[in-house]
Length: 335
Image (tube, rainbow, N blue to C red):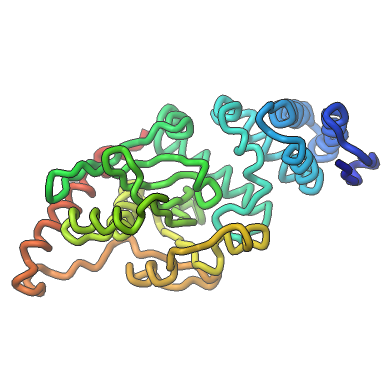
């Protein structure tokens, strides 16, 4: 395999298993140009290269691409590796090397540049530790879901609303808010924490359903939850989470801005969810960048204005959503 890349005056003409480590070393002098106190950056870069290039489960092509992308975006890459190296994320990297590559791939919105992506990633992980507590944030990052609410269906089915992180949704958001039945994921919303004008905001980058028999499972779940669609229940759960954390805004991705509309995924990924219609049905308003701003509160129709033959069902829905809101508020005590 051959790769040509001009990096600080050095030309890498070929890469093989031996040359791969040497090729990574040409990136090191870039740290000297970024900061005068370059020791920390150099150590972070060396640490990232050793982990990524020494991974036995990665093939040569992925390692070459890692080097190439790092060399093409040296400033952003160095700052990201330095952030990972000096924070609580350092211990999580050996188990999830995809975190090293996160800054090189589309994240949340295909429109944002690499510098904005770096800022969003750093803000998300920093705020996760602040809002959830560093121990909780570590546990979620390691794959342990954080249960926020437990619900009972019509026939005593056990449903749970939990925060978790999955590699399957890592490009749409740093965290996912999922609805589980008996430990099986039915549907989830992926989002990231961010801040703007010193206020906390949520950025929702995706909606995903379970892979096997999704329609049948969601149809059965809707019936069990007194007619509440799982995706609408998750939107209400997201609002409850936002209120519990005193968020100022919730930005939801438009279909045209979804990361899988990016050129690199256009022929390999398919977007089935109708994002725009979903956000609009929840009362969201279009933003100048094409995405949607979701209101913090839903518009609840008074029970007296409901059809008389449906009031018992709506009463059951209110009980269920109230229990969910209370559970989220109690379990999201700020550390």
